[in-house]
Length: 122
Image 1 (cartoon, helix red, strand yellow):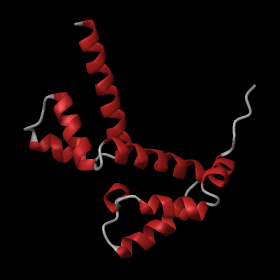
Image 2 (image 1 turned 30 degrees about the horizontal axis):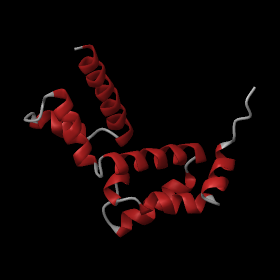
Image 3 (image 1 turned 45 degrees about the vertical axis):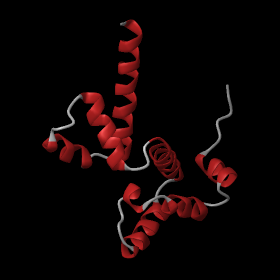
Image 4 (image 1 turned 90 degrees about the horizontal axis):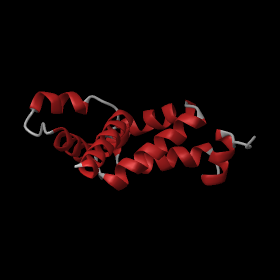
């Protein structure tokens, strides 16, 4: 059986401390983690410090993926709409903006796979 590292050991190995991980999360553009001003940033820091290490690691991975692949939530929504062929559907666009980054990233990944598989079989 493989020895799986605990979330605490991963945090200590990659970031040094939970506080450093929280600062890394807050270092991402504020639109990714839902706060738009400095007052929200202090509240967000407090929330992150009380969250589980495993949750923080998942958030960091998600933020990093969104930032590297798309740059922003808006660009990710645009990509999702283009994959679905619903670019002009403003109501659906508004609905997508209410979804979390994780949900949107999962949807884009699954639709991209379907499109690749369809193009291979054609």
